[in-house]
Length: 377
Image 1 (spheres, rainbow, N blue to C red):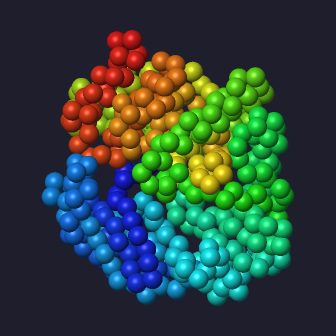
Image 2: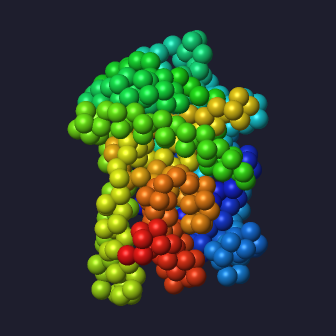
Image 3: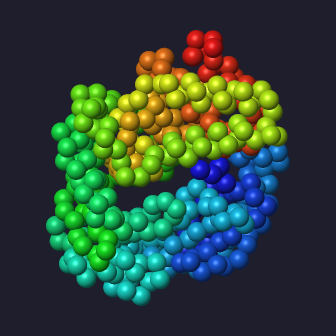
């Protein structure tokens, strides 16, 4: 789990712009590298957040894009910036690409195979981690659907079972899973299309949707308590991001060059988080996996293949990643255990995202708050 390396703010037909703390970024289009771009433009907004001393972290690169091109921006070490990759769609496209493009575009080979199985007329690629095309919005005459491809048959069985036995009877807001299509040794899962935008792309004020997301998590947790014995043995096929986060924190705690106070606190915090109540959780609830239809006032949670029983507060801390600890705690509310989980996991995320947090006043305040919520241990 990497830190925030910067943001791609805008992509248009003639260029890409954003910021990064790296001295330069690498830009590619459709997998072809175009070269490095220095990050030297003034960004007062980044400076005001305390992420850069002088704010000279902005970049801007000229491009010549066609509809359907995929722009990627990374640090020299290959770490992607937030909002990378970025799919460029011309204003005339109305959000769709012709299915004929798939057979001649280097990024859309799997979509071309899927088009041979379904009567597609147009499509739009959707990205997963680590930034590859993982799904496609498609129009096959029945209205828009989403196909998630590259799924092993056993994983498809597991996810279909979770939708049928948990998400649907619990009434959790998520796209319905319709059917599966075989693509050689892998399968594509066909879901309803939800006409919303990821929470991460709503801009300022996205926090107003947190209560609605929290209502869905509460609904999931209530169902999980009623069926705990049966579900605990059937956790998601992929490990939740929690495991990587805890491994990283434990590795840092055992490093010889770690300050003694920070090392002791990390070991204490990991022990406290391990003792928190476990609740049925999404497991990968970053803001790209929470969709919002602002016009209808609806939400949907997607990508459930990392579900499991996780410490209370983890889903919310991941969802609010980047917010100050006191803000995250206030928005989350709930029991003292849940607030400890939110603040504790926020501290672990902030350590990764903000260089120098450990020795800052905010870092010290987070550590104090964790001990207060744990009862002064």
